[in-house]
Image (cartoon, rainbow, N blue to C red; front, side):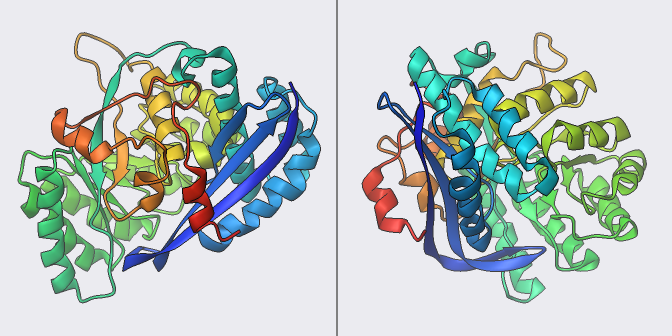
Length: 388
């Protein structure tokens, strides 16, 4: 079998509302799908992390840089291909966009391998430790409106997510330390004292400001404080973990096993959040997972993207061994963005219907059992929303 073509599909549409996080507001939803074709008619699908202009730029890397390196290669040699591409790109970027681009290609190669074997991806990895995973609802995005209005909105949004059946919820902050504490108090009010909620700062704070917010989260009983400081600030992570009761989470902006080795050896995370569509794909994710577990650090994958990304993460969460194990082991959760996302809800020929599953299955989502990723996109849908 040989690789005959690699195509990037960058999709976009105007969102019904302008949403944001600590770094920017955005009005468009974007997805970057990667399609790898073979001479035997088997096609694999992957996804690259990165919105908007980043996705368009990554399309150039996928098609113009990576594709010529591996055309004619056997797609089953995915680890050989991974190291071939990484080594040729090493002088031009061991992190960031080259790794995001490689991620989409690598995920597609794993999809092909599952289809060749006639097995779901979790079987290729070694089997399923669980046939469903609990799911938390991600919402409470920032909006360009006064903090008082945003806080009132957050109370209602948090209550809605809880009522929808999700096992926990996560909010955004980034309006400033004092305003952010008000927003966290609003979410806590919306879900009540016994429902887990998490706070995502997208690395907007100095260490001192993160301590200010983190101490308030300690009092509110937040489950984790995500990306409180810049991903480069390893010392800040370690200080926050030592000084706060709330779990410190992060890692979505880190790449490959070498970057993750530095984070884990630093002991600055209670919860690791690798992003499979960014760090180097499934091949590298499995190495990062092994590193995390070698450091006794539990993993809850970062998930942001289309139904392809969701399906890949469901497969990985199924195959993740319990840490440390026991009759009632600690379980990873699936992250689910509750805001409008056509590329997740309408992309597939057979939708995953996450919201319905959560509502009807006690907050849990079943693992797809089809071959490879277990899902297949609708080409007519892709054509309708493709911009590059």
